[in-house]
Image (cartoon, rainbow, N blue to C red):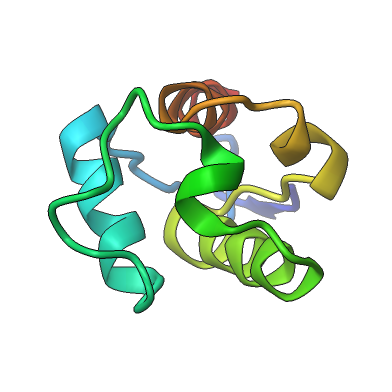
Length: 98
């Protein structure tokens, strides 16, 4: 991160306030992002591959979603290591804490 010189001290150029997202909010955002998901079907315990039908295209869409919504640069490998929606949520919240 770059810094701007202040008369008193070096200060970060920008600061981002990150709101931690609950699993229910996260699940709701996923439902809104992926049109083919039936609204009442997606649950935190659901297997990620099953829920999002993780084709190559959907993996790219998911990566873009995570970057846009959460400023998280998740690799396809790190996403694929998540078995459930809950594990994907954990990846996001851990990424936000860094």
